[in-house]
Length: 130
Image (cartoon, rainbow, N blue to C red; front, side, top):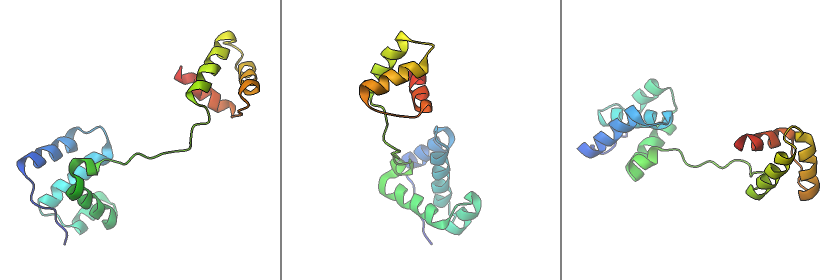
């Protein structure tokens, strides 16, 4: 049976605040699991409560023991590198400002200048940032 060390009053307050108020659902769920474990709930019981595998719950408890509240937060996940850099976006903005109702023409001009090619939806997403 795996149980965390007894919680101090400060840790208890941190976990309760995270469980009730944190902006991310996953952190709230993990804080709740740590609180229940501190009250005597074993991992098999937590598996039933949260519907998550025992390895995941064990990892949550280990992360709490090692890093505290920071260990319950998700790590940064990197996606695909951006096709357009900030400089590209600025150039594209200038071209679109010249021809605001002709996106395809501005995109064609940008692709001729930069040599970069992307899908039209990529350019539309970039425009929405402006």
